[in-house]
Image (tube, rainbow, N blue to C red; front, side, top):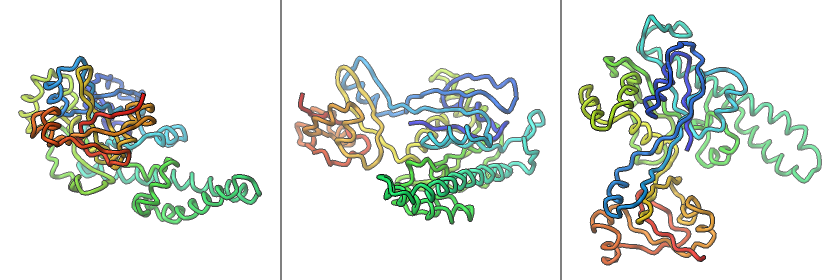
Length: 359
């Protein structure tokens, strides 16, 4: 799971990266360009602690999330080519003001100036997608006229590109103009306006976030979500990330925060990307595995190892609530709370699983 951190120069991208990953990348040059940074973090999951207590494993492995801090947002082909490979974006918009680091576009009107930055990035994404569509149409209009083995496929692709062009020409992102089934067909193309975006509006430590005009968070339990917006006190959170676990809670409480921003961002990113986790447990290892919502049991097995999926027999599953209520796997099994499921079973968040397979 890879998320790119993007934003204008001087927006606080690398500070956000430090806050999310616990890194300590330098901020001293104020160049506005910056270097690329990459780091994985473990996904917080309190269920692992419960499983570890029960199994006393040699190893505890959380799910992983990778954050990529890209150089300052730039209008070149390499930049846009790189971000097309990402699963989603964490977009940092600036709502703080400091004379030491002026806004690169000389914007004023804080704290609402962040909305103009976000609108600029949205418009650039539309332009980039439109450019890609127009180039593809031009190429396909020529190549699809030739009676080749790929002609039918090229004509179908041409029809798709011609279908999506009008909305982009009107400045409308594809995620706002296409139904979910059409969006799913187009995801392999890497359209920027189809990718989920979590916008972090970067404020000062003592800033009143109610003045930002952020849209409210939707109910994350009611289906897919597209774009989300939350405030972040990035400088403060970066300091928190450097503290020992014992000191973090006290520090956060002093500023009225209940949890570090990393936990919030990971949770919202899971919702944006349509992800959840299943769990495996034993004396060797307790582990969380990330899968797409709606994934089947055999698809989940493949995440662990292709041979398990290939030789799949059944999945033995205890739902997390049943695991806790009955005091563990063995007790749940004795009370007939363990279910035997086949390949097509749709995995649920927190399922504790043992896959049975041949060989």
